[in-house]
Length: 463
Image 1 (cartoon, rainbow, N blue to C red):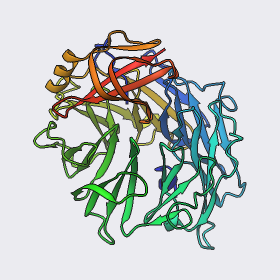
Image 2: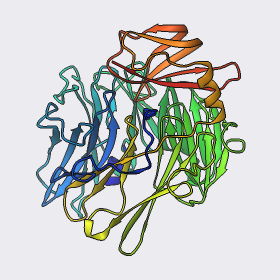
Image 3: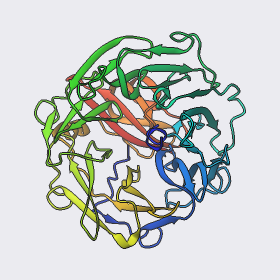
Image 4: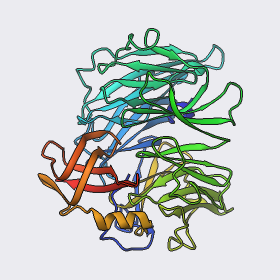
């Protein structure tokens, strides 16, 4: 159950030029401790750079769902909920395990997520309850979320994850179905059959980008024969697909990466091989398995894994340049390793994310309690690919950060602006000057395509 509930990018720092290392100015010698606030959190970055962590507390016969909001320095944001912490403890009985899903950030700053409860007393059949929730940006319950849906089912038929749709509705998925919900949290009975669309294949993950839905799927009883498919919207059939063997799909804005058996494949927004990456969209790496994949703003891919060393755990990060070559200036020959001794009492695995400030954040759960520890790692600059460098010479942002008007050195033909969550906030932009008065303060991506069909991607800060 924990795996189910807890399974439910970054600004390029052009002024930084340091080697990767633990940031000594972060917390106490590079570490911020959050004692008795829970563990196993899933991070969500907010447009202003602050961090939402969703997960659970499960200790001393207490199980409750926990959501934290952190400042960039790792401290709790005291203006959010109750001292930076929002909790739900619906059942005092320890037979009920409670947790929050990953938070989705709406364009209005509101936070959408699910509260999941598993009942398991070891005697009666297990059951699962999923409650939809939405908070205002300050952590108070959203009173306009008037019809939150509650579903009670068994483990195999539960919802696994959600995506926000451009229409303001929400799309959820289970193993063999999609469900759509209205903006107020009620079931959208106009979708499929009474809000539910059953499919003939298994769904591993669901992604959304620019109004398109992408599914990582498998045929019945054949999990290792996978297909990554694009749907033009949540109601349409498959418009494009890519078949692969066992592996895992990761999303980076409009691109997708498939990792499996020491092979990394890059797909574009049409679910087709990106021929500008490696050899026809593929590279071979030394790792046979990875635990996570992270992305820097210049297009670099960071592969994460860990290994026990007897005296502790080695956390290893390997960086791949945006064109698919190994970033040999990163760490030792492309891999940087941070060793955590057993005396630290950290879990062997870390939850990681790359922040828009150009740093890597690592979160370690405590082995014997409900505390977690956060470290901040300084990352060195990226090496842009030849295509990216050429684009940078053609079109640049004149002044960054931007106050009222975004000015460029060249014309764009059909550009879109995305926020950090990947949602389109402005589109169909033409020319070289655009008013951004309506945008909130934060970090944004400006995307377009040149005449060769190559993606132009620039980042800017709106003040």
